[in-house]
Amino acid sequence: MKVLLLSIVEGKENPLFHQVAMEELEDLTKTAGYDIVDKVIIPIRAIDPKTYLGRGKVEELVHFYDTSHLDAIIIQQEISASQVRAIEEQTLCEVITRTELILRIFALHAQTRIAKMQVELAQLNYLLPRLVGKGKEMSRIRGGIGMRGPGEQKLEMERRLVRRRIYQISQRLEALEKGMRERRKRRRRLHHSVALVGYTNAGKSSLFNALTHAQVCVEDKLFATLDTTSRRLWLTGERGDIQVILTDTVGFIQDLPHTLVESFRSTLLETIDTDLIIHVVNSVHPAYLQQIETVRQTLSEIQADTVPHILCFNKIDLLETEQYLDLRRRFPSAYFLSAKTKENLSLLREAIYQFFVQKESS
Image 1 (cartoon, helix red, strand yellow):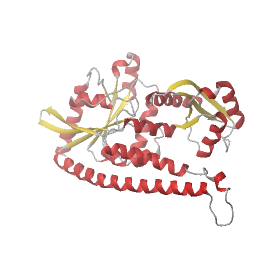
Image 2 (image 1 turned 30 degrees about the vertical axis):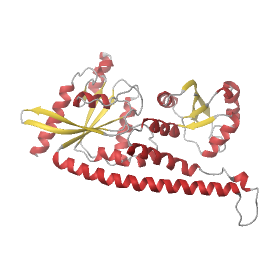
Image 3 (image 1 turned 135 degrees about the horizontal axis):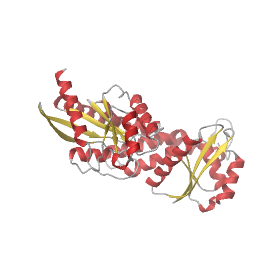
Image 4 (image 1 turned 60 degrees about the vertical axis):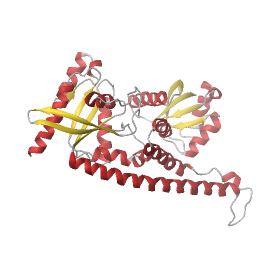
């Protein structure tokens, strides 16, 4: 599938921010398996209500890229359903928003029954408000006061079917969440618990495997992990052995679609109902500070910001010496390690051990 990536800069917005966002959009597109033809950032003075970027800008886009040779245009911004249709009419190719792209990636990576249900719920919640206007033209076929045309009838029927499916999935997820909550309560009574959280592709699964000797799937892709996985972690110290349940969680991302936050509530609750959070950071990413802030904001949204946490910078084996020393100066209380080479892994294990020793003695 050949796609063009498009980001729109309005007024005096920071172009550097859009460059970073475009790089992330490129990673998302590659994760979805699409072939990127080109990337373009288009500046506009103001948002056009009909096409978002303006009719003239769309015409320039069609002329310059010959969109007939494209399968889709992926837009960084979240535009309305009517704006999507207006751009599709001019370009004659599919238009995909960033939110829709993320939903498609989640659908590709969902493996378990609960993850598939959560993805479907997110997709339906995203689709429902966008089921507008499709039957307007058809409804004119049979006019008259108080009468509905076939297009409008079909639209209402589609809405009812979507709402019914949303209700069915929500009920099933609620029942599954109840069982998950009970299991978490039992686990908390019997064992200490730790959750690995972080921006997507920070190396959480690699660290999880390194700590627990598990074989969780590790890929250099965004959202490679959607399902939470838990394993026992044995820690040895001067006060004897401590058993911890370590959980690998779904990665966060900037502007995580609200439909995903709501649908993956039961999965995200794993980060709330835990004794300790290890916030894993990709130390080599150029926008790591922005990613740290995104994770902190997401934790705050799901009310997990009060849980004690350890900041952990991963992938230090890829850092230059100056970069490494700069990070240590900026974050003196953080831990710096490589899940790949196991460097400084023992220091993190000791930190987890000491946290629970102090917790038990307090």
